[in-house]
Image (cartoon, rainbow, N blue to C red; front, side, top):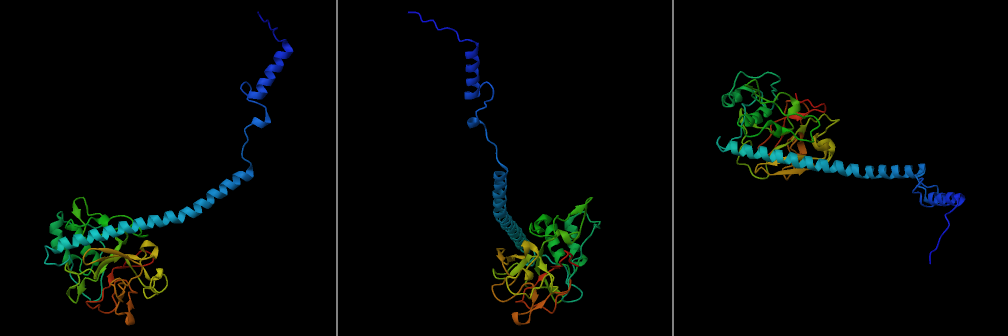
Length: 312
């Protein structure tokens, strides 16, 4: 049997088209309120922004702390590498570390920055032979001798947490070698005072034990306001400017490195940023001057840095 359905008339065709558009939205985008795409309200957007801001405020300190911990590790690796280079150097110098001549005035030191002036010497070996007399009394020049020996590149003297030292010193210019770092913003560390009287200190040698500190993050000038090395232990005011004042990396005689939260870094009562015993500590409050004579069991770090980054 053949079923013949009459074709819908014009009114029915229009109704069918309207129902299709409103029901499925395929033809005209849809006008059914129940199926219409709904956007965010202003209040909802503000809530989302507030949540994001809260998450950022929670995460940022953690990210900053993680970065500082990474910088401490990098700094410790620098000091460990320098310590190993000193040991290698001492093996060919009768256990002595590289050292310039002692300062003319006892219990003083200078930085002796080279500035932009090079020597007329084109061989590091030739310059090494002249270094003791060229930069007497300069602890940084002692370390520059290690660099001239090829033991420690100048970038190894930079701590990533140092707010002042940001670029490595140039070794030479146009083939002529520098006899020291160029300025205070190329060096992040201090060493134990390397002289005793008119000669090199017995402490500045390669046979020291694991309890003897030989290097640290840059010691601060104790001006009594910004920094005070007589402040209570673990006080940021008594610590280096590096690492946000939280403490300092210290390298020891066997080249191991420890992060110390205060300057009493010899395992006892000796503050490496002052001269003298606990009951009579003398802070370094003047650039270039060490108050009194440090004994062989009193370790004091030089040079020191002022609050503005200067060192002399």
